[in-house]
Amino acid sequence: MDKLQKMIKGAVKNTYSYRGLLKQLVTRDLKLKYRRSVLGYLWSVLNPLLTMLIMTIVFSHMFRFQIVNYPVYLLCGNIIFGVFSSTTIKSCHAVLDNAALIKKVYLPKYIFVFSRVTSGFVDFLFSFAALIFVLLITKSKFSLYNLLFFIPCIEIYLFSLGMSLFLAQANVFFRDIQYLYGVFCTALNYLCVLFYPIEALPTNVRFFVENFNPIYLYITMFRQCVHLNVLISPQMVLRGLLWALCMFVFGIFCFKRSQEKFILYI
Image (cartoon, rainbow, N blue to C red; front, side, top):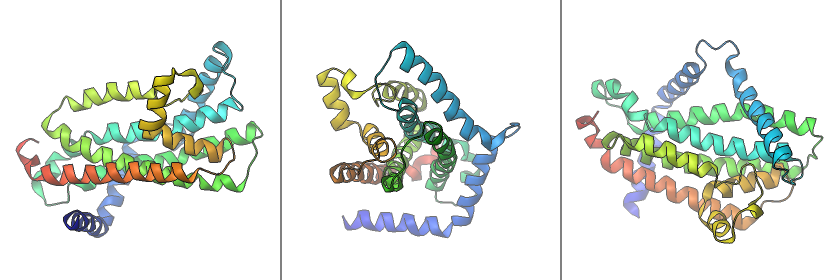
C-alpha cells in the first residue's frame, strides 16, 4: 500500500511539474482534431445534436420506446458513452504516436496518455452546449439537482484515465489491442442502455449490466440529475467512485511496471 501511495504521489508531482507541456499537448490534440475544418469547434456541439436527432427519429418512432423526454434521455447517454469510448480509443496510440519524442528526451511517458484523455474531456465540455440547447427546446425542468452532473463526470474521467493507461501500455507490446478494443467498444455500445430502456433487456443480461457495467452506472447517475431531476443515489456514487479508483490504480500500476520496456518496442 505504501509503495502504491508513493507511486501515485510521484505521478501527481511529475504531472504538476510538466503542466506546461501538458497544456501544449492538450492544445495540440484539439487543434489537430479540427484542422482544416470550416466549422471547427462548432462540430463538438453539432455532432451530438445531429446524432441525437437521427437516433430520436429512428428509435422513438420506428421502435416506439415509451421514454419521457426521449431526446434528453438519449443525449445524456450518448455524450457520457462518447467521451469514454473516444478518449480510450485515442489513447491506445498515445505512446506509439509520440515514439520519436520519447526516444530523444526524458519525459514522464504517461503525460501523453493524460493529454489525450484531458483533451477528450475538454471536447466533452463543448457538448454541454448541445445538451443545454436540447433541454431548453424540450422545455425540460431545471433544478438544483442538475448541478450534481459533475459527480459522474469526475468519476468517468478517472475511470477513462485508468483504462487509457492500461490500453496505451498494452498496445505497445500487442498492436492487436487497438483493433480488439474497437470491437469491444462496439459491443459495449449496446450494453450501456443508450437508446432503449433497461427493462427491454432479458433478466440475466439486465443483472449483468446493472451490477458489472460501470459505464452504465455513470450514464444512469448523469441521467438522474439531468434527465430525471432527482438526487443521485449515494450508493451509486460510492459504487462509481470505487470502480473509478480501482481502474485508475490498475492503469497506473500496469503503465508504471511496463514503461521502461517501451523503448525496445516503439
